[in-house]
Amino acid sequence: MVKQYLETNPEVRAALETGGAVVALESTIISHGMPYPKNVETALETERIIRENGAVPATVGIIGGKLKAGLTEDEIEHMGKSPDIAKVSRRDLAYIAAKGLDGATTVAATMMIARMAGIGIFATGGIGGVHRGAETTMDISADLEELARTDVAVVCAGAKSILDIGLTLEYLETKGVPVYGYQTGEMPAFYTRESGFKADYRFETPEEMAGILKTKRALGLTGGVLVVNPIPEQYSMDREAITAVIDRAVAEAEKRGIRGKKLTPFLLSEIKEVTGGDSLEANIQLVYNNARLAAQIARAAV
Ligand code: PSU
Ligand code: MN
Image (tube, rainbow, N blue to C red; front, side):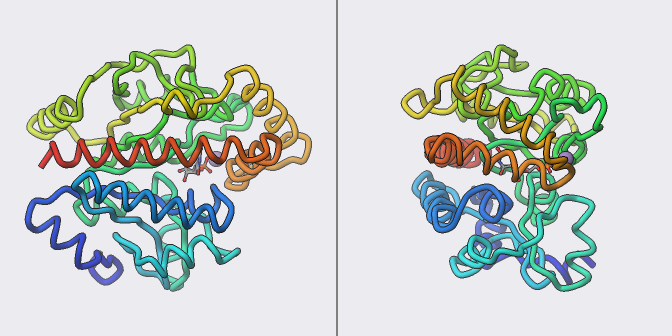
C-alpha cells in the first residue's frame, strides 16, 4: 500500500480534503541546487510566498524512507544541511523507501509523490531536459518522461542552456506535453527571459491557465503540463555573459568526465562559482516568482 510509505502533513491533508489550494515544491533544489544556508532560507521564503498568495505549500522529500508531502521546517533544514542526502528521481524511489533512507526529490520524483498525495500543481526553478550532446551521451532527464506520464502542472522558469532547449522542446512535443508561457510567447531560458525558442501557447492570467487545466481534466487527458514563467526583468542576466559561462561549465564537465546524476549539480555549482553568486540570486528570485504564479493558478483551479 502506498499509504504505508506516503505521509501527507496535516495542514496539507486538511487543505486537500476541504478543496483548498496546495502547491508542491521539490527538494533536490535544496540539497543539490543551492549552497547552505541560502538553500534553506530560500525554501522557507518560497513556502511563505505560497501562503501569502492563498495556498498551502508542500515541500516534498524522503525522510527515513517515508515519502513526505509537506516537510517540516526542521526537515527542510536537514535536507539543506546534511551533505549526503541522495538525489532521488523515479528509478531511485523504491530503493530509498525500502531502505529507510533520506532523499531529495527531483522534478520527476516530486511529481510522482505530489500525484500520490493528490496535489496537481508544483513550482520549481528549472526542469531537467535533453542535455547538449545527448545524441551521443543519451543523457535525457527522467523529468521529461515524468511530464509525459504524470498528471501535474509544473511551473518553472524554462530550462537552463546547460540543456539543449530546442531538443528538450522537441522531446516534450513527441510526448504530448504542452508548454504554456505566462505573458510570453517565448520559452524562457531560466537566467534570461528569452531562449530564441517558442512556447506552444501564451496565457495572460492565472485564471486562464486554471481554466485550461480544468478542460484538460474534463477531457480525461492525463500527463503533465509545463507552465513557463520568465525571470523578472530586474533579476535577469546578460544573455551573452551567462551563455559563455555555461559553455565553459559544459566543456569542463566533459573534460573531467562528469556524467549521469552528478552532471546537473556539477554544472549548477560551476556556474555559481564563475558568476560569484549573481546566478544564485537570479535563481532564488525566479523560484519566488514561480511560487507566486503557481499559488495563484492553484487558487483559481479549486
Ligand atoms: N535544473 C536547475 N536546477 C535544479 C535542477 C535542474 O536549474 O536544481 C534539478 C531538479 O531537481 C531537476 C534535476 O529535476 O536537477 C534534474 O536532474 P537530472 O538532469 O539528473 O535529471
Ligand atoms: Mn541525466
